[in-house]
Figure: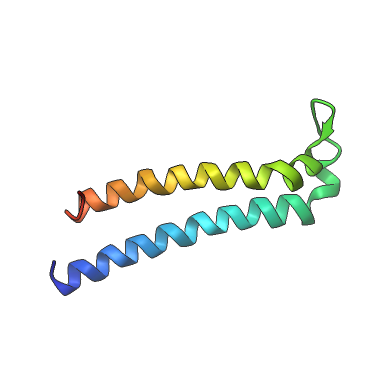
Length: 84
């Protein structure tokens, strides 16, 4: 792999990681801490939505983001011909 292609590959990789971490930070910090009071007015079953995000939501979103990362990295690997 030439240097320009390697730099483009890592730029795509870092960009993907940055975007996924931003989503996770917004969900865990924003919804779980900053917006907990307005979200508590919405119920998810018998549980306030703000409490749910603080206790379960950020973990579930993180696991979903792992699967998204794997899927997107497979596409990036195919695009740059570095797949297995």
